[in-house]
Length: 112
Image (tube, rainbow, N blue to C red):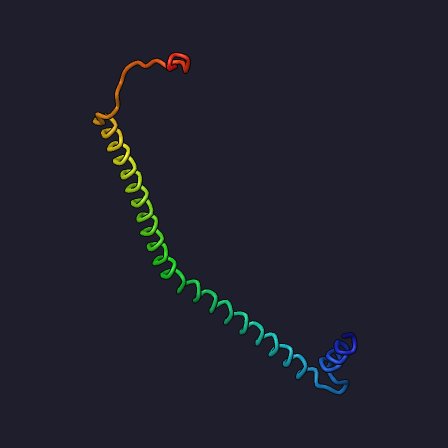
């Protein structure tokens, strides 16, 4: 890895007989390309966020509808349970086969 880094250092270093104006111009061009690339990346990120807003709005509406549907389902289930309990109570009240009264337990000695 160290050899690879030194090779790049040798490539980046300006040659001893290089024109200083060309070296400065090349570094400025390199910096300009970095700034342009960074600005394009930020612009794409901002554009993506702007396009994401309508999608989030639509999904929020769908989530709200799903939540309302779930709430209505729960209410319907509770109402059905209450109706079922009321019907069971009315059946128990109207059931004539139940004999109310007192009873005594007879010993087994009395049966003989």
